[in-house]
Image 1 (spheres, rainbow, N blue to C red):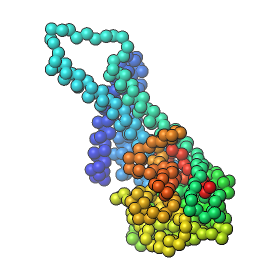
Image 2 (cartoon, one colour; image 1 turned 30 degrees about the vertical axis):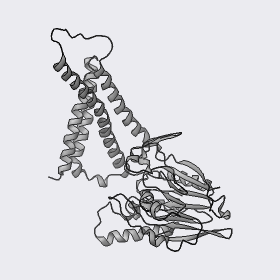
Image 3 (tube, rainbow, N blue to C red; image 1 turned 60 degrees about the vertical axis):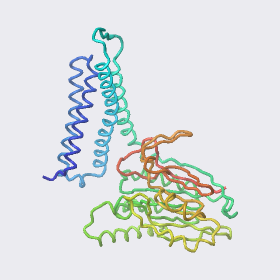
Image 4 (cartoon, rainbow, N blue to C red; image 1 turned 120 degrees about the horizontal axis):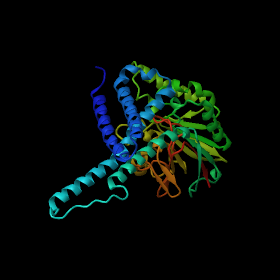
Length: 415
């Protein structure tokens, strides 16, 4: 049998959650017409059965050969349904715990001689909580479906940064940061081109790309070379690698094939006209003055992500420059190594988190589940005189959409 033990455990969990949610559906429709209930229940169990059998048969469906769009949307919908039901189940569990506590108290402290009365007006607390849970579940799923349309809705974020030690010639410098392109996820070339147009319309002096050009394979860029090779700036386009660029998340025929993929990706950067910085630095000159641009390979403080970066090698020789910019894909590098060891790194640029492609951003407030994994996950952070900016990502991976956290083009101006 090709289904793993994990698949059977997952199927068991799905069945339990389906039954649990169904009880809430029965509760909120108890006063509905019989025909209405039959229709609702049939739709519910039809969707549940489709999910169950898809997971059961997935090892035999060769989904890796499906069209990319069909595959990504199918998995997104199934995962969205699952997590929506989990969210609803939390509400139902709260109500069940509440009723258990009330029942226990009634058994322990009730006076048998006193009749218990119930009212017929309004809805019961259980029905209300069931409605609340189903509403939360539906809202989450609806948001995820709506988010499909936002994946190419590129948002330009503008920030102005001031430094006392920035050479005068670099005042007014405009940098565009792009991160996490993930070309293997794209399915609308015209939409991707519109994002590139937005970058070019900013007329930046310098463009910096902070990793994850592909999902896994260098060949994913084949159809987008003409798009991203348009990115040009007077002071150049510089890039570095992210965790996905190494091909660590795909099975290769041999270690040599994996190594060759990385070498091919380096060639892709060169053919785009980008200077890939591999644990090294370059001097940026403007008006007769210089600053250092440092780029390292992926380095993460999180155990499941690689530490290919060699900060000591990249930093060596930059002591003479009065101002330093570091390109480092993973923002966990900031607290783990940059702050304690390199206090003269003035600005670090990162990506990686995508803001989890899901969250809330309002003036003065932002939230995403990714913040429980990453202390710095989107936007500007400061520690004394040092600054970190985490780009929300140009592309997407896994979930083919964005809810609340839009794809980002960052425009940084030194003032």
